Structures are given as structure tokens and as C-alpha cells.
Image 1 (cartoon, rainbow, N blue to C red):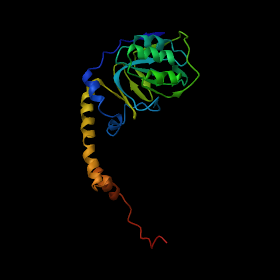
Image 2 (image 1 turned 180 degrees about the vertical axis):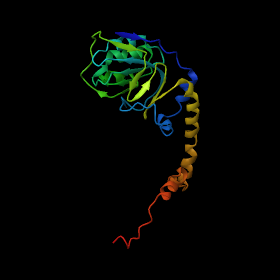
Image 3 (image 1 turned 90 degrees about the vertical axis):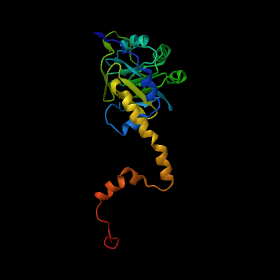
Image 4 (image 1 turned 135 degrees about the vertical axis):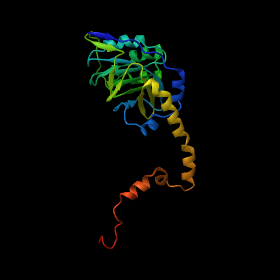
Length: 227
């Protein structure tokens, strides 16, 4: 059976602009969820922000992905859940279609193929690897714009998918601007910290690591007693 949910609304351009100025790894200092694991970028540097246009495939059958690729809109991020399968569902023609329709990125919980063609397109892609073994058009089942799981993270249609050279983060729309502001504030403080470190400030004192370390340190060993 095939299922099709409603396509997500485009993102507010303010969200795209705000998240385009900050890093996923800065968010990684502040929370532990919403980070798909096990995926690597096809190249670096890269960056994209857009609403998740999700697809769920039943292992070998990529029928739903071909349908979804044609329905992508400018600004979308294609997100594919392959139900644990490791073969490639995303090659030259699917990537070309996605890019031509205006997708700004793709997140594939499986492998990709036709890597040289994808690189030539310039489409930012995260995947679990590369495989010459591919999916097929079998017409068995699949779903478009339903909740999916990618790298241990649940992604709903329309969630904000925020990717850069460090990884991927998934945010709810309603929190995106507040998070972007928090990340911007944190990153804006870094130049001053670098200046202080260059002048002799100890990183561990600034971060509190030194106090934490000393608070639970064993008594200093006497070199004589250790003989």
C-alpha cells in the first residue's frame, strides 16, 4: 500500500536566514536529541536549511521515492528512511530530479550511487555510504510525507532540517528562531574568548573544567612514595 501525506508548508525565510548563520555543532553543546547519527556528507563544506519532505521506503522498493522526487518544491530537504536497508536509493537521475525541482539538500538513511554525478550537481547530500547495489521500482509499498526515523532521530514532515559540514540537526518550526538566536549569541562570544586565550587565559578556568577536575581529584601523589 502507498500512503501520501500533505506536503509541508515552506519555511519562513527568517528561519532559513537565521540558521544559515550558525553551526549545528553549537547546538550539539546544548542538547542531545535531534541529531541523525551515522550519516556523512558527500563533500565539505556544505550548508542547507529547509523543511523536511519525507519518504519511507520498504527496503528494496524505491517507487515512492521516484514519485516524491517529482513533487519536491524549491527549498525542500528530501529525507529518506530506507527501513534499515543499506543499498542505494539515490543515484544520478533521482538526484538530478531533486536538484532540478529546487531541493536544497538530501538526507538519505541508506547509501547513494553515481557519486560523481551528484558532486557535479552540487546538491548537498548526507548518506550512510556508497553502494553500487541499488533499489528497484517494484510497486509494493511506500509512504510520502509521513513521520520517519533517520539515524535514530524522528523527523516529521515540515520539521526544520539544518545541515552543515559538522552534521545534521532537526528542529521543530516553533523553536527554530529562538534556537538560532541562542546559537548566534553563543558563537558571537567566541572571538573575545580567543583573544583572552591568546593573552594567557586558561580554557579550563573559563569553562569551569579546572574546578570540576580539582573537586574530584585524588590527592597528589608523592613521587617518593610511588617508588
